[in-house]
Image (cartoon, rainbow, N blue to C red; front, side, top):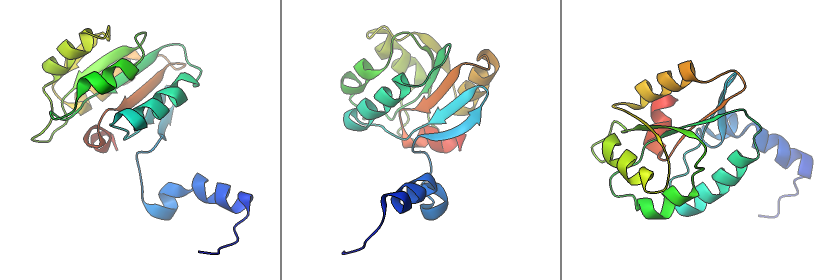
Amino acid sequence: MGWKLSKETIQAGLKKVIDNTGLAGRWQILNHSPKVICDTAHNREGLTFVMKQLNMVNCHQLHIILGVVDDKNLDTILPLFPKNATYYFCKPNVVRGLDEEKLQQKASQYSLVGQTYSSVNEAYKKSLTAAAKNDLIFVGGSTFVVAEVL
């Protein structure tokens, strides 16, 4: 469009993207101790990027709250998730939400281990009580899961 924006202006705008646009849930930090990060990535491309970012965060133990919709091809996304995390499998509160037991069963095929929770809120509360102050909690797998936490 011919705009002449400095690198500093662009960086300042990106730092305030939620305030400037209302777009929430993209690598959004919700808490600092323990650190809680949510991201709405829900396909292979987005989750590949987010898992790389997650891998760069220094923490003692990683906790992942994971829920998806029932039309998700789990074989394309579950291999992207780290095996050394503690998982909280949950069902987003939408008609298309995949049952948490089915998600847990499929995840176990990729050595992802954790408990099931009937709601995102229940999983989130449990992760907050289980996590130490130097742990990291990641909330994701679906826009619907992130929306319930926000």
